[in-house]
Image: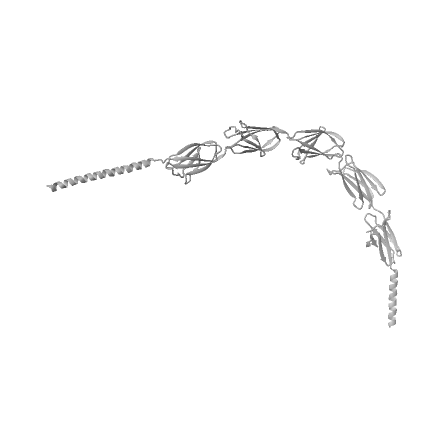
Length: 464
């Protein structure tokens, strides 16, 4: 029995040894058909089934039973697929892959406007080819190239700088390039004093209007280098600029400074009574520029165009301010100054120097209020003006005074004295009191006389 088991074991071992001997390894080497360079990352398929990718040296080992022929397929980006049969006993095969033909599109655009550049000459060199095409209306030109190769691209267009690039065709079949104009020149217009940009400045070249500067004070022009041009720039409220300028090869922009035009400004200061105010101080943007003459006038002859804050100050008057726009016609400014205001206290008392409360105060026919417990009313009045002040209260005669508040006064007091008034009813009541008193006196006198008479008659009989 043990002997029988040993025989079976030997048979199994023989079978295993025979199977190991029959297994085979196929070394697959993938290379470029033209250059012979090894191709890494090529996908390997055996009988339609993916088995792996080539290493960095382009090889892939495949182990199989070695009994049947193999259907081998190699796939790599940029190359045509390779398919073939491999004998079962073969141990090595070299797969030569042919590059795929592709269409390379070159698109050319203006670097500033981003519009297509039409008619640009595009030349493509590499892999034994040298072809030239001109760009179409969409700025594009097409070339048939081999995938995986590098190509030199040269682009030329009228009034543009030449451009040279190198491209690797690896599935990216469209490249885009921007050309910068060789005749592009920028005009920068600035204020002479502030260096601020001047928008809306009109630019003329050789008498032809080229346009107006943008919000940044710039304007793009297309001018050939190494030529002389007549340049003129104008802007509202600025002195015109005109000069012959030669454009150098390296000029990128031309800087033009404009000086503001100067215009006359006159100012006349009047009071509320329309009388000229002499020696009034005139300020422009917070800076004292001078004083008015005896006729209330002040004159400047060289004020640049622009917006200014004008202020006029004079003793006894409130400050006058206004924003004035100085333009080509100059400015004639009228400043009407109001008088200062003073705090006025109206004090009302009676003939005995006692305070009169609740008295109604009327100033220039306008009721201003009533006096307080101290007989006072406070109000504000314009100085340098005459006023009629009246106080009225029941039981008193109206009191009126004319007064004038002097210029420059800040506090002023008006005093009024009121006399008590007697009404008709008070007279009637007084007369009644007097009549009653007189009547009482008469009755008393009569009563006394009557007593004396009665006394005399009584003594007569007794005496008899």
